Each structure stands twice: as structure tokens, then as C-alpha cells.
Length: 599
Image 1 (tube, helix red, strand yellow):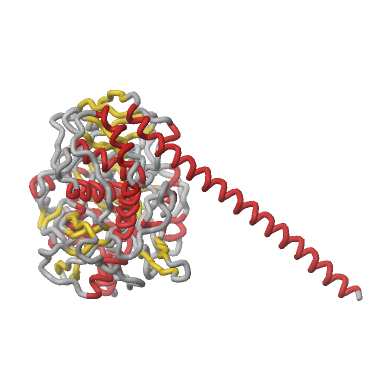
Image 2: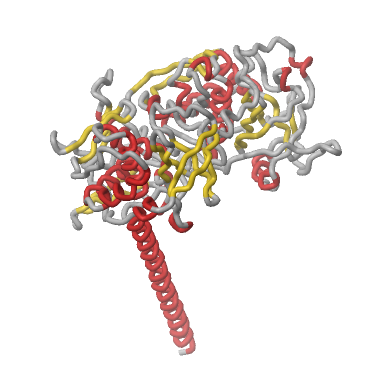
């Protein structure tokens, strides 16, 4: 009897607990729904009154191109050659210190704790009076910081049809969405994602090769990932086709019109009202946003997509009217984007997560730094110029955008490559469609290029090829062999000589172009050192040069610096003929800045 009473008591207690849990869960759902409702009301209120802001006061500001490049000195005009023996260059490089947030992280010590003979004691042995150089290490981000065994299907886009409700739901991994608040339904008038077939993109008609079914799958879901649905192409006459960096994109034909001529900022408020009064305005914004998400575009590339669409659909409108329309469409997607009157034309300004974007004008307004995105083909005559923008209430700001990329799902245009030197070979196929879309990508810090990824399937293939070929080598042999591939596998040219402007490559772009320079090789090499060789390393920046240092498991006779008891040895993928431990004489006593820490 006592046992039965005890069990009954337990069940009653559990029932009470479950009841309380359900009650708390219901309260949480109610709280969450209120937040979402408040957010929707906020967005609706701001957008409904945005025309009033445009009709209001426009303040004049001065935009400045603060920094043209992260490098304060010219890069080497030709490929530096190493002729000295290792023993003649043995010295300790000027030691530097990682920021406290990194220095207190024991993950590196844990990773290396099993290495025999390593002194992993923390704390720096530094000469008195040494002032550590301030360093800017981006937050860990991207596939370089993932486990070596990649999760299959990382970042892919999944589509599933909900036939019972007669609509299509898009489930897109968080990596592909600029901000959680940008999910479908988060801006006024948007009820669901565009259905398959409403919008899409294919290779341009002048493509050298027709797309196979496998390549089409890659065009929809991302490189190498299996498609769970396909997009039906609308019939002729039901879509508007436009060029997007050499690819043929399409949206449904939507009844949406913009002004043919805007002569001043005083007309933008009325223009907004006329665009907002059309059902096709919000629908066009919805369709463009859906297409951008299919392609994996971030805020910047979404702007370029909207710009391409507007410029080609409304060819008879003047530049100001078209940029005003782009601003309307992007604002309705939830982006923080300002319309700027430069006098001779309009442009837009967006805030990015990056502290600096090189070579582009910027201005801090109401505590937020905005970067000017110039219209295609427009270059300001000076580094400093005046512009005007309307004043907005503080609560009218949208979300900032991240320039780092987390995968692009573009139509696949194959370009074969093969890089070989000293018994090490990398070969495969890269998507040539990334060339146009990334060619004039804003120049963010090198660490952000290193933290981005374009095609994870390609990267995994390259990493596996390297792993299989260095298997059986000693650690030093593997490092030097991989470094030699970088020395001799690519032709060298500075960005200014090759492109006419500073252009860091994303990892994948090294397979597109036949020449690269120091930061391209350093980004490429450091990624493979960490992901293929499994060695912690640092992407470092000198005044006119980008290089790499490696935390080798064994002591190396050569140049190094010490960070928290760990020796990082100079390993320069541009210093041709050098080995780990050798450093260019110019930088033998320099104190580098760390752009990214792989650990």
C-alpha cells in the first residue's frame, strides 16, 4: 500500500511539473508572439512613414575614403627569391602578443598538449618596455574553424513542398540568411517565400557548355549537394530575364513601375509613395529577396542583384530614379540602407559588420558607420566629397550586413584547373561563374576573406587531395612541400599590375586566375595548413606584405615569434625557395599584425 501511495505521489509530482512546464511553455510562446507582433508593427510603421522622412530634412555630410589598402607600403613588384641557407637567417622575430580574449583561450594548449617536448606554459617572456602591437583578429567564422571532418551538406538550401496547405515552405540554413529577422514574412506585405519557378537563374546563353543535370543541382542547392527539389522554368512571357554578372536571372513579370525622371532629392518622397501604393512594389522586393536567398547572397550582393534588375527593367528611367527604386526594394527587405544625394547622381550607403572597407567612401551617421556603394561604372573624382541624406529616427535603423560570404549557389559553369609542383598536385573543377560576381567585391580585411567560403565541396576535395599526398611525410616535409606548391604552382603579379586595383582573392578564386600575389597565397596556404595538415597557424600582415606563421609540433631551427608559450615559425608562401623558419630579410625584425588565427 505504501509503495502504491509513493508511486501515486511521484505521478502527481510529475504531473504538476509537466503542468508547470506546459504553462511556462505557453507563456513563452505568448511572449515570443508578442515580440514578433511588435516587430512587425515596428517595420510596418517605419516603412509606412519612410516617405515622410524623405520629404523631411536632408543633412549634408562629407564622405572620406579613409584607407585605400591595408598595406602601408608597396608590395614586392616581383616574386622574392630565397637564396640564403636557413642557419644564416636564424633569429627571433620581434615578439608580439595576442589580444586578451585570445590569450585566455586554452583551446590551443589543449590541442597541442599531447605533443611531446612542448612547453605549453602560458605567459610571455618579453623584454621590459616592449609595447605590444594592437591586433585585429576577426571572430572565428567560416569553415576554417570547423572540425576537420566536415558535416555533409553544410550550408545547403533545402526546399520542401507542403501540399496540404498548397504552398511551398523554404527552409534555409542560418548561414545563408543575412539576419534572422530577414526570414520570409518579416517585412510588411510578405506572406510566403516565392514558389519554385517564380524566380531563378541559369547560365547565360553564351556559356561554352550546356549544364548537366548534376550541374543544375549545384546551381540550385550549392556546390556538390544533392537537390531536394527543382525549379520549373516559367513559360516565355511570364518572366523578366536580366543579366547578373554573366548569368541569366529571371523574375516573374510583375506590374511595378517607377518614375522616368527624378531631378533632385526633393522628389524622392513622392516617388516612394507611388512605389509603395503598387502591390507590385513589395512583391518585387519579395521575389528579389527570395532569389538572393536561393543564390546565397549577402546584403552587398543582394544590393547588386536589385541594382541589376532595376537598371535593366527600367532602362528609360534616369540614374536617380533607378537608384531610388533600388533603395525602396532593399529597405523593404529589411536592410539598413540610406539614399545619398551626391549632386550629379544618387547612390546608397550600407553599414557593414567590418570596421573598415578599403577604397570606398564612408561616413558615421548617428553612431553607425555607413559605406558608400557606388553605381556600376561611377568613380568619385576625389577621396573626399560632400553628399546629403535624409534624417531618420534612431529606431528606424535596420540591420547591418556582413561582407563575409558563407557559400554561393550559382549556376555551375565548369573550369578545369591543375596545379602541380614537387610531387604535389591539386586538380579539379571550379565554378567560373564566381569570377564576375566577385571581381570587384569590396575590399574587407584579409582575415575576413580567409574566414569566408564560396564552395565548400571544392574545398573539401582540395583538402582531401593534399591529405592523401602528404600522408607518410614528416611534419616539416609536408609543410615545405605545400609551401613549395604555393611558391611555384602560381605565377606572381601584384593586384595593381594584374587587375589595376587592390583585389584579395577568396580561396576559390586562386583556381580562376593564372596569377596571384602575397595575400592570395597566404589566405590559400594558411587554410590548407590548418585543414589539411591540422597545424595551428596565423595569417599575418607586414606593412607591404601578407604571410603565414605555423605552430609546428617539433622545434624548428629558424625564425619564430612566441605567443603565449607557443612558437609560431615564419612560413612564407610568397618567398620562393624558402622553408619553414625562413623570413624575408626585410621583415626579419618587423612586428606583424595578425589577421586571422587558425586554432
